[in-house]
Image (tube, rainbow, N blue to C red; front, side, top):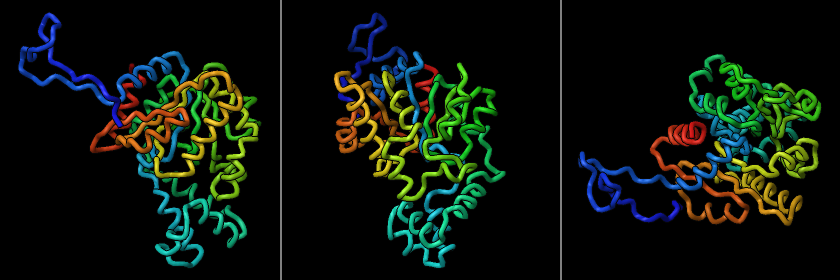
Length: 300
């Protein structure tokens, strides 16, 4: 739901309301979330924003959707893809695939090939450019692919990829931390894809979880590229809120934000109880809306 604001009036040349602009043009209206964006922009300027990047960012590069993964699993299991896809979410189906096949390794090999096809051109992605050039000292991503890292390399921005606790020893001052929260396809053991691995991930007891607790203290978390219909990521929102309350119960939690290409008063109310405010930017093209949001945030 957009923030309720006072009507925007046209102004005279001397600043008093009540007259149309001299050229007769319509005055631009304030976008929903202007005040939220201003607060977030200031936090970004001070390097106090932790970014969480979801699959919606990679889909903008033309990578296969999750439905393609489900169809591939069905094909490998020799079952009808449509009926198989209706039997659960991708986490449940991946769990079933592992039980039937004895390993999830072959599925990861297929994902690696499909997610890193030679025709993908990350250098043409404005979103990836803004992520690389923005003032985000810490970026968590639940994506398995390596296109975010490729964007940093293309734009010659220093980064440190963190997949396991061993990578923490490679941290360097002035280098953006890219934490692969659900693993990386170069390391099968790190992948969080089936239900068992996902539930273990959300125990929040691994070294990366301890790092996450420390990273969010005193910082705002911004979520981009996530679907509000994904109950798994919503559970992550809930867990992060609980972590804060358990770690520093007497300190107010910094407001976190979720960018959305549309307003939704139901989701806004539910997320608010977890300290997350929506910043909706209604546009016909969700990809363009995300670019507009990031440009407003990064450029200030």
